Every structure is written in C-alpha cells, then in structure tokens.
Length: 138
Image 1: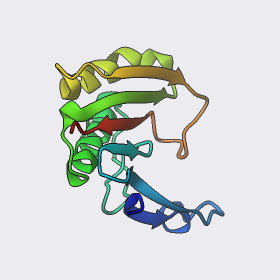
Image 2 (image 1 turned 90 degrees about the horizontal axis):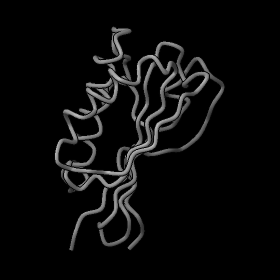
Image 3 (image 1 turned 30 degrees about the vertical axis):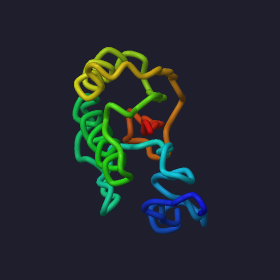
C-alpha cells in the first residue's frame, strides 16, 4: 500500500498568477495510516483557494488552524494527534497574536513547535502559514 495523497492539486490552478506546474497534495498519510504530514496551511479556503478577506493576524490564524483541523480529521486523526507545528510569520510583531490564537486549538495537546519569521509567503497578503505533523497512536 502506497502513501495516500489527500486533496491533490496542481499549482497552476491554485497560483494562476505564477508560472508554476507542480503536482502537490494538502496532506500525505503514511502507509498504515499512522502519520499525517500537512503542507503549510495558509489563510485561504481549502475548497476554493480563495484568500481570507482580512489582514488581521488573528483572523488569518483562525482560518489556518481550522484548515489544519479539517485536514487532520479528513485523514482519520484528531487535533490531539498533532505532534509538531512549524509557524511562519511575515512580521515578528504578530507572534503573540498568532500564538495566542493557535493556542486555542492545541490546548492540552503539547506539540513541539518551531517559529520562524520570513521575508514573505507565497502571496503578499498572507501573514501566517503553519504546517503540521500528526501521529495517530496504535
């Protein structure tokens, strides 16, 4: 049994303004279904790829974390299975707001977490991107 690629897409469809043509997936579930790797989730709708209409870091983070929860659940996991998060911020001044908002979704979970400040994300209006790994216990 091969890994399961969940919600496959091509970047030419999701980033039409960019000259890209990459076959990707929102999540990959390992053979046996015990690990879930999510691509970096951004403040856009999972079904339509429409960006959130807000430049508020808390609102963007809520959408990102709802996307993470939705994908983990679609892949057979729960938020308490999250083991690692990597947070990318475009402005370190948003750190407290983003982490406080993210914390609402991982209360009692205790994943490891790395935070980075980057020059930019794939779209200039995005302030936060978070990728996640989940391990489903036997």
